[in-house]
Amino acid sequence: MVRRHPSRGSTVSQPFDSGWQDCQRSAGDDPRFIPERIALVLSGLAAGGTERVVCSLATHWARAGRQVSVISLDDETTPSYYHYPPDVEIVRLGLTPRPRPPLSAALAIFRRARAIRRALKAISPDIALSFLTRQNVLTLAATAGMRLPVIVSERSNPDRQHPGAVWDWLRNGLYPRAQRLVVMTEGARDCFGPRLAGMASIVPNPVVLPAGWTCRRGGSRVVAVGRLEPVKGFDLLIRTFAAIAPAHPDWTLTIWGEGPERANLEQIRTELGLDDRVSLPGVTSTPGAWIETADVFVLTSHYEGWPNALAEAMAAGIPVVALDCPHGPAEMIRHRHTGLLVSPAEPGRLCEALDEILGSHALRETLGAAAAISASRFEPDQVMAGWDAVVSSAMARVQARIRHRRRRDRRPELTAGLAKP
Image 1 (cartoon, helix red, strand yellow):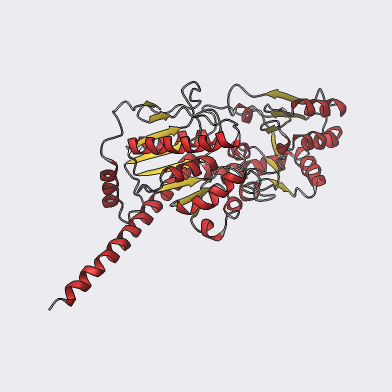
Image 2: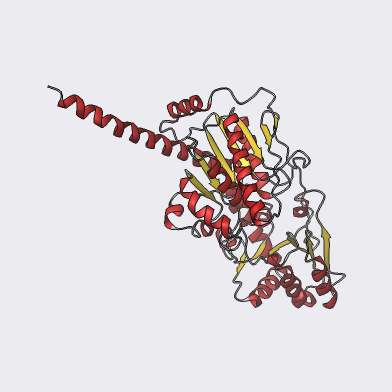
């Protein structure tokens, strides 16, 4: 285990039980209460939506004067893609998950849970937050018997993205031990049974547009963004664009991203005679730079956990067309007010929607302006306030249980006192 201590000193300032008692005394019923020491647990510090959110949370709470530690299962050979403030402690466990035979995998799960437990005891946080199913399961297993509240966060689509039968079984058994469950959409919340759905909070991802970005639209460019894989439906997008391309000769299609579907998509493009109108430039060297030149954004995914690129497009005032896939688009777009929403069961409607929006400058302007206003709910300050509320709620719940336990424990003493002559 490798620890990068914050510049102001170690976060381990008190024994674990002492810190927990301080937390109990401080929380009360203050809805704004954020505990002093916070631990965040995730699989690694590479690029990704979850990794970006964890960095944003660590930065937010560190700036609020809290002692924040980030526990990562990977090692220092993978540099952090996102910049953490120097006063955030980084703990690298050096246990990067990788495919293993069943017995070896079971032992690896045990080792990772044990390492997380040791790290948490060394850090002595008042609360722990974990991200993604496997890390959630490991953290809940690691904290068994510890008086440490845990908030788990699902960042995917529970209906479609299964970590495996064993992990599903462990999730069903361990998630009820969490203080709160955080999901990004109502659809994701509804994937869980009534008990877990009742303890769930919906907090979307924050949208952070590139600093100093400049609008350079007007090039008649349709844009899509995502990993080149079947679930993103880019084959459907290219075929749809081919159907309307003759009616809109000035328009082009750019699909940003990289992945295993590249060869297939390039073949479809060539077969449809669109080599000069459909480009697949790969991954942009400047994250988010695509928003500067996109005139229309299209989402054709079969399913999503939270479509970050769609939220970014809306925040940038780009008119959007999206398939109403599970989950996210229907909660982000109000059809014909902030974008065009198309039923996945009627792919022909996607062609109609794209044809309509490319043919009307006025519609693009109206939808783009409304989308930017609607997406203000995804601004970082609002999303961070949502996380603050979740943490405060979890601490209040713990405090209520402690009070109930103390009242229950005092009853026998009072009864015994009254029984004395």
